[in-house]
Length: 139
Image (cartoon, rainbow, N blue to C red):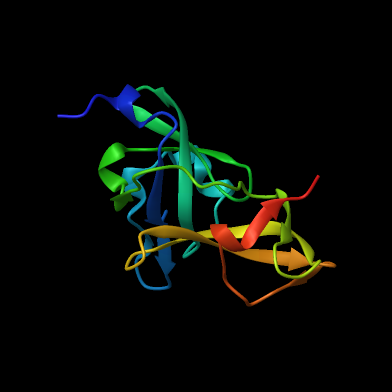
């Protein structure tokens, strides 16, 4: 059995915090901290998150909105083998062309077993997916 402290610093995939339907109300909320309900929208997928600490048998995670949430470790869908090279909000430059952007989304390619990134360039969200070998930190 894994000790909770072993999760600190790890990245993993986490699905929907909770969802809401008109007939029966909130679903899946028993896995999470009820005080987080005002932070995350119903049906919002968290995607990749980073465990930053442990508190009261829960993991404290940070996700792309730079918000810290409290979850139970049983809600982890996929523990990733290593951290991403770039972080949310980090300024990067494309290696082949002089395009400067900001990391807005981080994903995990299951088949390739590596991270990919989506950028915002000039305040516009780009649909192109970038892998780590295509980007550098912009200094």
